[in-house]
View (cartoon, rainbow over the protein chains, first blue to last red):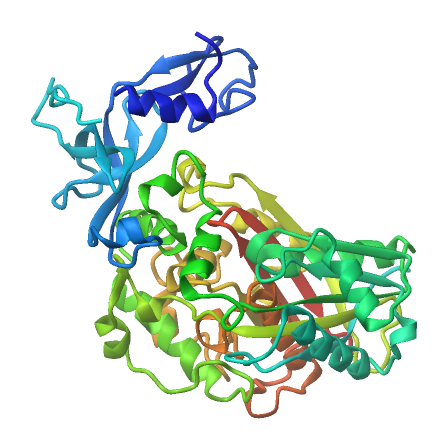
Length: 134
Length: 379
């Protein structure tokens, strides 16, 4: 597989995959598309399919949407999740999800976008609910 | 030159200015600043110009110079979000002290309120987020700051009532400034009961969108009332909130320390504070990371009168972005304008003692770009 690009992240979501960049030298998973590993500075990256399991770092409920598509679904919940592999990623979440919760994501179509949707993990060893909607 | 000085200050009123343009507003504040400095337009040889979202021109500084009839040996437009104003002053200081320029006009302004629809404005601003990983989720600038607020409050115990206290304080201050956008008094309950935007932030936790402009003249000659730019410091650690390492260590503290070190002064020696406040949480986090208040205590300090006129460390006596108003780059420059007037003893009803030192802090993006300045009135 070629290097991860912004386009391949979006294309990955459309295919039901959470594709991120992983450093080939130290194994760190990156928070976005990076020219150098944020951990060790290496320029050698490889695509990586992330687990979709993590811990909620931050969350908010949006009442004022920035576009017509999202205005039709207010209120909705956004979160930042620290994935088990270390990268922090933004997605939607279920209303009951709080900061510090263990969560797992599926890929859902929301306001015509393919987005991560995080829900509370069922317990130790829980796996993501199947049935990608994208 | 061994030092540079803020020798002229000018601003338009902030708020709704029908029929204005970015250039007309910049013109008004620039003539006021040049006049305040006791100079003529022909004395200006350098121009630093902040971007305008309502006029995204390839070379705004030269467009403006042409309109003003300025012939310059240096002309630049800068873009660093809310930190742009402080960064332009820091750069002007470097350019003056290096001998590159004699008198630099620093200006920004735009008709952000009347020059575009509210939706356009919100969408333009949302682009400070990552276009692939963040913006498609339906996030906006309030969303990024709300996410940050949720984490900061989880870690520190800061409460919504603490944020509201800062909003009330800014409104009290704006009430005494004739040029402020929002002057009607508000109570804590008004903030807490205002409509939700993105939890935990409500409408009154967010700054308004305003038309307005601010300009300065920076010179190597102090003139009669020049305020010395004694030091500056910066920190740039991330652009997007997804890449922010620690909500309690965003770089603000580092930038302030660097500015204070350059000035050879301690934080405790600062008589006046001009701190960026795009949202209530912005002001709380900056006050606490810089060390003005202990972590989680900025609201308590505000309630105790620490930051008020006549208090030990007054903050944003013009009313800040939250109430004086936010017209983009100029919104952050208004903090500097008020600091200069306080140091010069020219703040009229808002004057708070005879301050000699001030710390300014500007933040761009989502606590992404940090620029601090130390200003000193030599007596």
